[in-house]
Image 1 (cartoon, rainbow, N blue to C red):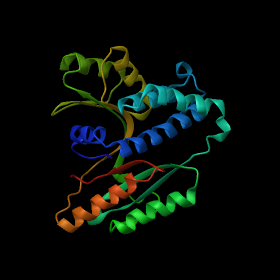
Image 2 (cartoon, rainbow, N blue to C red):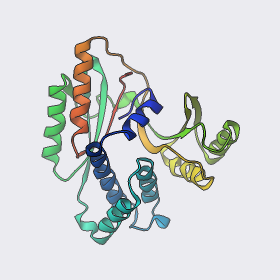
Image 3 (tube, rainbow, N blue to C red):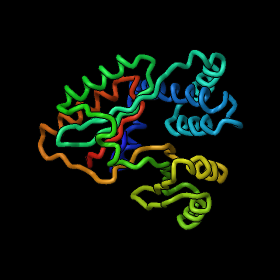
Image 4 (cartoon, rainbow, N blue to C red):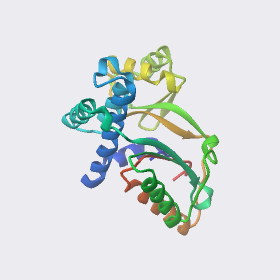
Length: 242
């Protein structure tokens, strides 16, 4: 889930229970399969999309054998990788803008699940484009302070590789890139043996919304929990400043 307190959110996500981790690994497996199908096969050396998907999976602590198994399965029968990428948009309680990215083999099931989450969370499912203009699609890499390189050297490394921004935060650094420059920056950090706690293309809100009542907070958390429980849902982005 995207949010404003980035490092806190990442640590919370990585501390999920086994059932939640299982859902995360299922989603990552689908991303790996799609990268194999649309990026040029199961060899990471010649498939940049797959290299990025592997890096993301590793940052989420997906076991190496699970990563390899997902890649081999997809490469062995690409025709069976029949997931469809769909984006849904809408508004949560208090007008919070929400974007939901789905990978599914059943469009009707995915739409019904997303609509149900909006309804039960006192939100409204919208039309394509209703909130997308409020977000920027960027590459985002999060690095902890104790990464083995001083701040100035790390900044120079990322900027030289093509990063658009280097932001110092509590607990670490946030590196932002253009979507088409993300892989180059990530691989430059990887080559320098800089550990990344997350590395992905994401949607960052241009402005944030706050919720003020206990009812709104309860409904928003319910909406996000329902979406998080759905295997079809890959990523949820919102502009709620929790």
